[in-house]
Image (cartoon, rainbow, N blue to C red; front, side, top):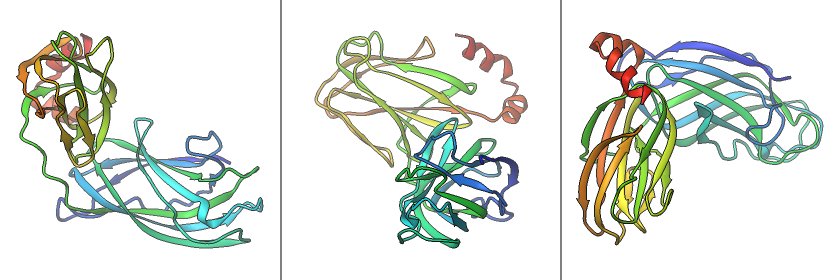
Length: 284
């Protein structure tokens, strides 16, 4: 049985870097197949509080065997934002096939961020898909444990945009470009080398938060924690967002040019009086 539980959770009082707990979710949540399988159970939570970098995630709960021969070591979960996975767990507990109910308590490294106003989904899945429901989770809770985020690069500010679909590209540039897109916590969201000839394009659906664009030449490499290294190609480039040219410059060999923009929460948009401006940007 697939169950979707929706909850709104406030951040714990105290430091902006405080840990965050989803509260106990009774379930049941089926672990029924590979990541994204329609039979997998999940719950959603809306995070409200200060943005913070998550260095680790702890899961606690009870996993009851489905009696189909699945191994304990195959239990998994993942965290999604806007339909895309932002964290995928590894092995949660050692063991082969089991009967009855097994308590699970596991903490693993994460490296993601929780952003005020965003809705996240936790999905339960299996690393090996046995026939039938592999396991059922009950009384499960997650701790998002604060860590130290990587230092963001110095970047040219491009202003504010409304949430939704983004088209970020280098169409009109004079050489072979590459693009990388990061969130404010240094997580690599997307990269692209060639689209429409030698130019680059990233199509992404972005919610609240701050985002960083890395512009490089051919053979650039992009890794997490803002780990972008420029390639040998160089020349004049144009950076466009949603049909508008927002920057133009000359890129040297082995160089990365950084840009950033912010997608504020709806409350912030009203407070800053930017509603008309952001609506206009979204219509382009």
